[in-house]
Length: 530
Ligand SMILES: Nc1ncnc2c1ncn2[C@@H]1O[C@H](COP(=O)(O)OP(=O)(O)OP(=O)(O)O)[C@@H](O)[C@H]1O
Image 1 (cartoon, rainbow, N blue to C red):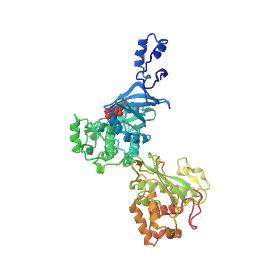
Image 2 (image 1 turned 45 degrees about the vertical axis):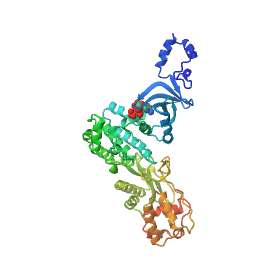
Image 3 (image 1 turned 135 degrees about the vertical axis):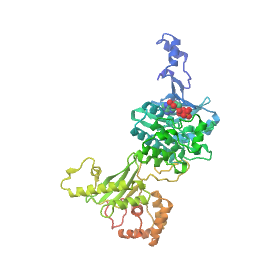
Image 4 (image 1 turned 180 degrees about the vertical axis):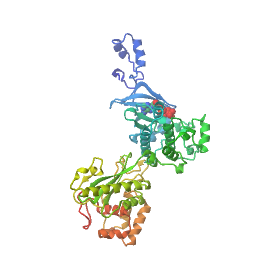
């Protein structure tokens, strides 16, 4: 960057003084002008607050906007300086949208930094992506291998899960490979062109999205949901694996419209031979009511988000374990639970977590199998206690934090994929803004005469169970004349078995009532602090 040109609002800041100064280095003034006109590092405009500088370098042009390279002078980063032609009135109408965009922060979504209006242009500053769009990459790589495709898909879907988790969901409306950007060095993928959908509507263009990527319901003008992004994602996946633009056989938007509204799939779909890829695409481009959500798509077998069970802690006797189901490829998504090897079986515990909607059914076999494997390995360790040298680095035992004493059987921390929690206009459905995983619930103090409803409804809500679940638990407790919290507090451990609650419900309620490390009935094992 040339500091001589850093003058605020200077559309070509060629002040005569600069020219005189430049004479010392250049043979003539005209040569300087010529040179600077093509100097990509020349600052040609500065933001009203002076923080951002637009450089003389066009990164790309789309149907709606021109994007220049820019510099964040406060942080020293390169940024993208986007110019979108619009009226001041339209800009003012976007203010709410802009506030939302500023709050959107996710590693797989291009950051929106700032914006203002200047000379018929809505100017906004976003994160700069260095390696072009996914579309360009696909053309370059010809047919990228499936490992790369999976990595891209997971990242796109993580971005969509994030957007759709807002309440109401943020709908991108124009997902396509040209709007997905890559940062070369690490193959990092981010969704771009955020928020321009509303601007394009403002401009009264007949088509909001891109016909090839638009779900049938978008043509119908009856309203649509965030599922339109999943349809578009399905079309992106089709382009990634075939290298062809969907509906390439159509000559114009009208032909595409006809095919899409008749439910006819793009011709290139027939070129897909991998059954897993085909199945995922079909789930994404299915009619709206059958279509995957972003969460379901990322859990599809093709993307290989397979659960794995790891041992977090164990007592010395290796019969009280804290286990955690971790979903590979899904950051921080986990289900943590206590397991008593003397009284629990893997089959029962997994089954209960499925009944309680903590785990999706399709993982039943693999998780049960994994827990049994851990139990086998642990009993093997018990038998070979005298010779512990047999542990290999890959053994789950190596991940174990040995604890001394008993692990509380009451702890149950769960973060499940389906944890919607209603909220105000624009809050995240997930209670934790960072998706940091576990929901650690402290016990809550209840007066002994508090109605049992208070405890049950609180606990159900805390573990993201719906009112139906809470009513089911309540009915079972009331059947046994449990009317107040005090009635439960007085019980012995063995009494809980009589309620016919699932292990999950029982543990959740007891966890809430007695806490992990604090109050507990005298009959329960002493806590070692784990
Ligand atoms: N954040 C960015 N970093 C780097 N280059 C970018 C960035 N955003 C846009 N570009 C470049 O600018 C070009 C135009 O941007 P974009 O496609 O978003 O414009 P548009 O008018 O909204 O698009 P469309 O025609 O798809 O509606 C892109 O193809 C890309 O080359």
